[in-house]
Amino acid sequence: EGRLVESGGGFGQAGGSLRLSCSASGFTLDVHAISWFRQAPGQEREGVAWLSSSDGNTHYADCVKGRFTISSDNARNTVYLQMNILSLEETAVYYCAATSDSYWHTRTIDKYEYWGQGTQVTVSS
Image (cartoon, rainbow, N blue to C red; front, side):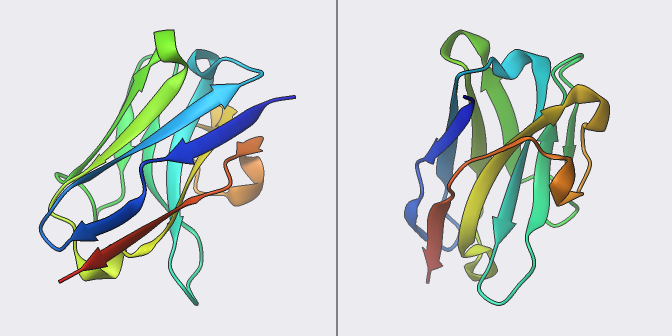
């Protein structure tokens, strides 16, 4: 059975950086589109970064464009989210998710086949 596990969350300072990792087991990431979502308390889950497996295209939500970078290491079956210039408002639980590449950069939650358990990111001043 396929599984995703996020790591790398924790405490970060406003203006600082964190890197999240998403490791897959039971399936290979390089035949799926991978996305990062986040959910702040009382808010809906929102997509922030998307990576296509077929051509390596990336897509970002406007609010993170230029600061976040999604990348993959197929040899490690792991996807990363580098987050720079963090703001207080980005405190949230961050999730990675995998779907068929035909749905790459969909924001529709139920199109995703696999979800991680989430990792908490807390940004402080």
